[in-house]
Image: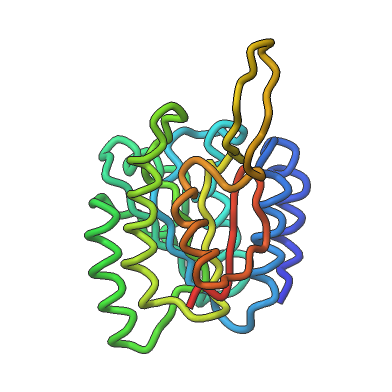
Length: 219
């Protein structure tokens, strides 16, 4: 299923502004097009500033446009703990996208219970709820791993999981002359570092690993 009106919007209005996220968002929506029937999108961390395409990616705006232009049954739910961000996001999207103010881990726990009780699964899980400090990446990465471990009960092998803000990292040695010797290959860093390690351990399929990283077959 390929909603032509969405792609017209994406190609003309969104893609030119998305900077380093343009290619991976294109891969995300191309993958969603390959899924049959309605899709269920669940996002942690909502869009919070109008027009901030290059900075935050305007993910919720994109997801809202996608479900509205795909069909009448697809859904999008986004959760953010920040009241100001939630209020701002509600002004950016249609009523078909539910914008919830709550801790994301608590929210996902309740949502998963609801989904499993109704034999529903998450088609696309987008994790972006904890701001990244590149000098101290651990709290953000741990939080997003928590989100995944909660949500995984509502995933299937076709479910797409994407983490934002995943610049590549590698272990290196700085020599006396200030040259760098890398001692490991570049790997997913930032918010997705621990999710990537989990994905590797369970043999998930990595669709892309750039500034955003995405996997299927996590279960």
